[in-house]
Amino acid sequence: MSILGWLRGRFSSRDQANWQYRRGLIRAKAGRTVAAMQDYSDVIEASEVDPNVRAMARYNRALLLWSSGDEAEAIKDLNQVLEESGASEQVKTEARRKLLRISRTTERAEQGPQQ
Image (cartoon, rainbow, N blue to C red; front, side):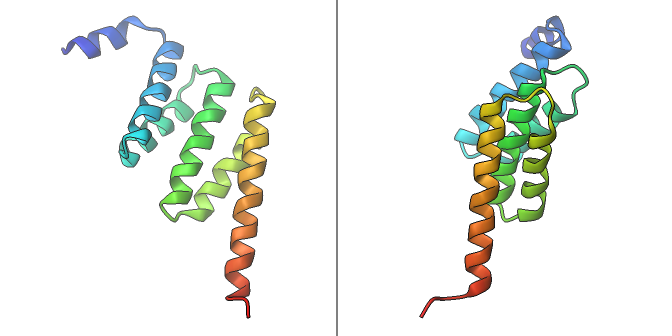
C-alpha cells in the first residue's frame, strides 16, 4: 500500500471527501479535467460529506461539463446545486448566475448572427 493510500485510510469518510474535493480543484487548475471530474463525482456520491462541499463539487463539475460542451449535464448539476438543502447561499447564487449565463448564451446562439 502506498503512503497516500495509508494516509487516506486514516481519515474519516468526510475527511476523504474534503480531500478529494481539494484534489479536484488542483487537477482542474492543472487542466486535468477528466481526473477533476472524477474527484468531484466521487465527492457527490460519497455518503458522508458536508452538503456544502457536495454542492461546491457539483458546481465545479458543472463548470467542467459546460466547458467540455455537455450543456445538458451542466444544467442538471446546477439545478441540483439549487436543490441541495445544506448548500450555502453563496454557492446557490453562483449556480443561479451560471444558469442565467448559459440561458443567455443559448438564446444568442439560437438567434444566429445579428445584422
